[in-house]
Length: 327
Ligand code: R5P
Image (cartoon, rainbow, N blue to C red; front, side, top):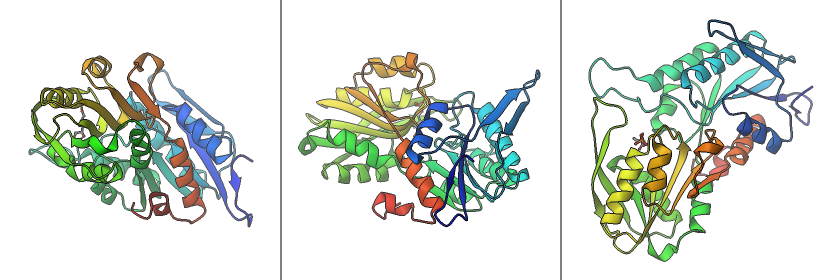
């Protein structure tokens, strides 16, 4: 039988995946030392998704991984159907592993008559049968409270900071937040990179149009300094490219961009290649196709972290222990 059996023979860990990011799922399985549960999935002529597992999941602790990449609605629906199928096949527990949790940006109403899609997502997974959610760097940590059950909120920061430390002179680094809302995250980054000063970009947004932002000016000491610009996600790269421009205009020596999720919708690749950043560092929570990779891009693997977190959950261990007791 596919999976891991606990040492007392009482429990079975099963890892399943949808079709959004097979490379990541395979890599997580390799780190766990198991195979993915064989699954058949296809579409009917009208687009309805069909899915069926090739083995019994009765009594198993199941982890169903799907990253909400494009086409986002299809992949979310596919994961919901897999959760429903697990529930109806008598899985003992069902953990939704969404390395990138889609629809998270709409986590509050800015104006009347808008949805709160991050909450709706949590409700959908709960209704489908999920007992637990696991995700990496939620757009806002309070989304954890939208799901009525345990949420394992993993941080990519240790992976990103370890790499970035090897790429900069830590005695001359300013960590920069691309907007005022992420200062707290920038503070944590600065502590990891030697305790240098912080800066942020004053960004304004046109709330009537998607992905429309203007980087106005930088607040903080960046002249002659290596800047590390940190964000949770890069979608069209309007935010990041605008921030890099403002930093270089203010006299920054160079800029490294670090973000957890590379959504990279058009025209992100073009913007990132030409914005003047020395390097752009992301993780592979989302698939990055070969034709979207460019010379300054570094993609770090998130699979070891997800595999360790899954193992801690299965063993009734501690996910917090993976983050020096801080997560
Ligand atoms: C904003 O709150 C987010 O953290 C990102 O900065 C933003 O969503 C990125 O979008 P884009 O790359 O399209 O500017």
